[in-house]
Image 1: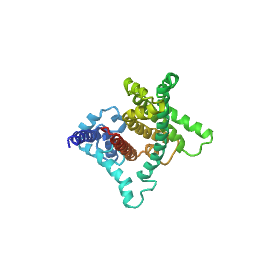
Image 2: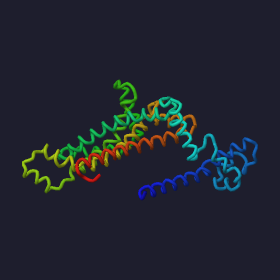
Image 3: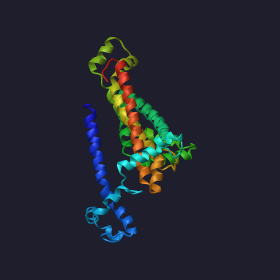
Length: 310
């Protein structure tokens, strides 16, 4: 309970701020709809109201503030509206036996999850192999690490279309592989940095002790460096899996995909349905939370098997 109370307090504060922000964000749309229905609004006309602050509009038209909480296409939906939309596209779909319908976020989440896991696997493999090379080779350290750092300065929104175009030019069919590559691009760097830190965690005295036991490089790696790196590795994996999910969603935006959480966000933006955007965003956040929680569970089990505290 000591851990739960601060979390619930922060969550309640965020929900309260969100609820209070709905009124100023939606007041202009509420007044436009009321005026089209014949109501007298101050000032008259949507164009003159553009130069008036939302606080003045709310003060002069206080009787219409509540309408901002019930718009069909709000600029900022309420928490209740987002929750209802999430239920309609997840739980209600399951109860109707339509969990894998293309209107279901479960289906779109599964599409995104597949590319995320492939990208996470690829990015983790590259990060671990790169870290081993950097730790055991000074040449790799001087050449690979600077380029790894420089690569993270390139905006992913600029790189994603390039990856997709190149993939299509070399004959890669489908959108799964380009999305996985984009996902791996965001994932490998935190794994690389964390694994380098972990492999260098053992003290020089511990390495010297293994040398006195006549241990070779592979034995030192398996018996000392690798076990010492696991806490660092799992911390990096938690960051990497979240980054991989972001990369997959970004990769779905420029591809013209019709499936996936990124596609739902894009379609919602194109058709002016904010509730679809917000529900997809919360579904992505929930998916990221599940993946990080799963990795945390694996970490606890692995460290417990090693006799360490998780």
